[in-house]
Length: 139
Image (cartoon, rainbow, N blue to C red; front, side, top):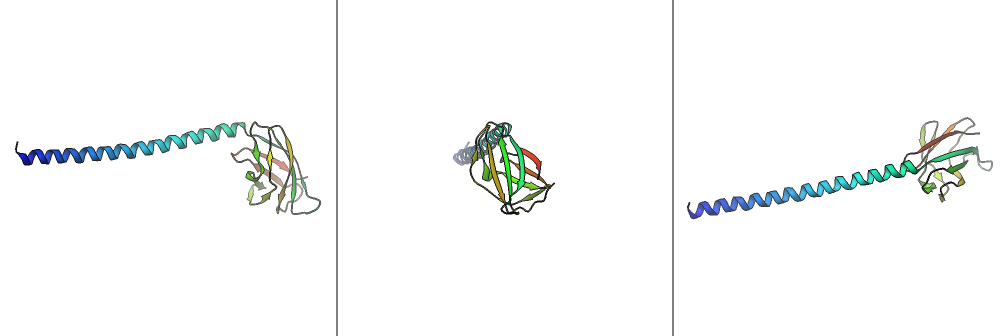
């Protein structure tokens, strides 16, 4: 084998090794991202299993007909942030402002849902941050 053939083969081997190392780095990085997202998904499922709410009553606010006063109990094992609750009226999502604060496990809290015009017999669903839902009728 001549000198030019050795240099050519050596060059090809170097290029091959560089390409393989780039493929390994990219694959390793993407695999790590998949594993991290899978772990986050499992953590959310665990939190969702421990997150439970119970609507005790829903009444129209006597001071402002556009607001609802909800008595809600956290029957789960995790603290619920009131601002992260979502509200559906008769199955339609409403962007509303909720009073702020937290509900500790096994505690009840009266929260106010602002700017949602509801009538008696409307069905109100409250959905927690991780997807737990309870439904009650306005009385």
